[in-house]
Length: 314
Image (cartoon, rainbow, N blue to C red; front, side, top):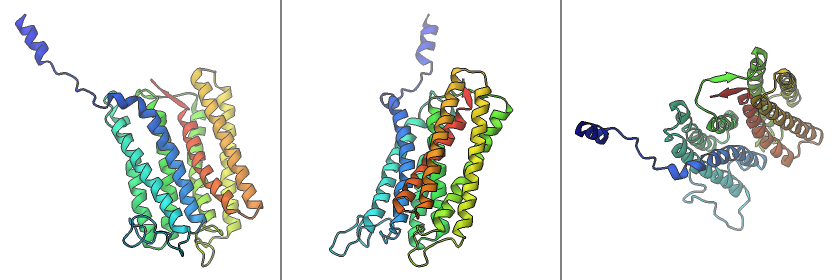
């Protein structure tokens, strides 16, 4: 009996989860992270559309000797627009730290899932550094485009993390046959030229953020716009094919969820396309271009959400 008692006393015990009371907040924090990553695209777009890229002339300070914009009678609105974007970045850093705490320390989940918790903070810090470089090199267009590209990637990874949180940690099992899987892969790959060409369209037009020559990329605006439009139409064709394939797949709760996600993507795509054509035929009003930028972030989320629903995990 004493041997048994000693064994029980000396048996290793699971470490107490010090964050147990906060675990129910995980999904809300991950959702806030997705929303924040889309919002930063909107505020970054506002900086470009209002020519406020150098509103804060220093980094990380806004003006010499001051962290925040300083008001005086000759102050324009540009420092406040730029500082607003930096403020959203600060909020994203706080959210990203919460993601690290809630995801990377969850011992009930796989190591691969826990590693994903570091992606948002790494991306946000990289964005902050790139933002500083952009200010120091006077808005070099290549670095501004990298800014947008990383934002789009962060939306994708944030959507992936949100989706993984409600999945199990088993091996992924495809919902449909090879054609469904292929359509999902092609859809995800086509998103890259859609977003990239859209960024080049903005950088080649009157809302590029350059007030001297009126553009930052020396592309023919009409040619680059048609290229962007062509990539979107290819995206629409593949999405339509995916919907057809999903409705030919035997219905299960998982397939029904995949159909709903695909329809959400279809609605987002149609709305984004309508905004794009409206801004094109109305002379590119700045406010509509800003909405289109936010729509790009939502399109990235909706694409990630739709393609991730094409598999299940035990």
